[in-house]
Amino acid sequence: MTLHMRTHDEPSEVGRDVVLAPLRAYNLSQADKQTALPLLVTLSDESGNEVGGLWGETAHDWLFVESVFVPEDFRSNGFGTALMLEAEREAKSRGCIGIWLDTYEFQAPAFYKKLGFEVFGTLENSSNELQRYFLKKRL
Image (cartoon, rainbow, N blue to C red; front, top):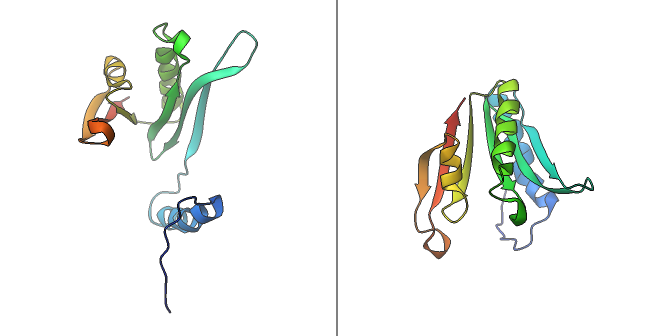
């Protein structure tokens, strides 16, 4: 059998599934049968329009927080803290032992540290010489 390699600048979801579906199947056959469960916590304005929130997933006893967004006009008013505390509450209810996330130095490492997170890894010299931090918090 001959295999050929090609780089895709604009990959499709089908192409992504070519890699992820068999990888997930293999991982599930080797590890416990726990599958990832999405977590979404939203912020809504007075009209009920969702304007921000937190996105993540729980798997293998950890919550991974992929994204947190609070509209600029509402920052420094406790909404980010409230999102993280709600995510932590849900992580505990799902049996998680911790939360992890990553952030760039221009984003919010100090914010997460105030919430009890500690750095467990860094990538130096990322784009524009910015550091990327990986943080965790045990529950």
